[in-house]
Length: 200
Image (cartoon, rainbow, N blue to C red):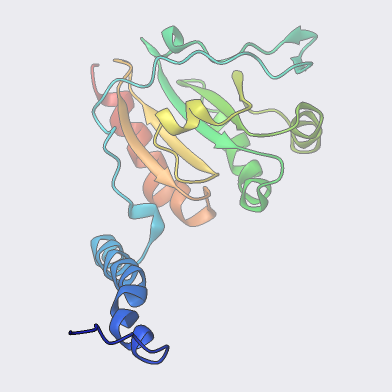
């Protein structure tokens, strides 16, 4: 009568060691692919599948209690994208780079050829209002994305991110990461100018 030999405690880990290492190997492989797709590792060069597509049609309520010149600042209405070039900035008061880019949004707000739209991402309204009170409100409209779903529809990886939307309501460009003194003139303004020239 043949009896199967019991597996000892030392044989079991050797036999299944490769199974335990498999998730790590898969993760390392995906990370390597992701890194090489970026080229030089610059996160601002992440591709966006939404370029050339119509901006998400999700309306967002206004940031509660936000006023400008005594009037409530409206929320995000996707119909407002048509006919005017828009710069859409996804931001939050808890986002450190958002504090650094705030003065540069004021620079963009002075260009009345475009409208500046804010999406306030997963933020407490009081904190968001204090943020805008501290730096000034550059936005023509601010939509409150309390649960982050609208930002997912925009393809946001993390805050801050900035989009250029053309007069046709299509996303023309996406900047991942903060607006900086370097990229505002070298990258963002040229992309805005391209969108302004398109359709003229």
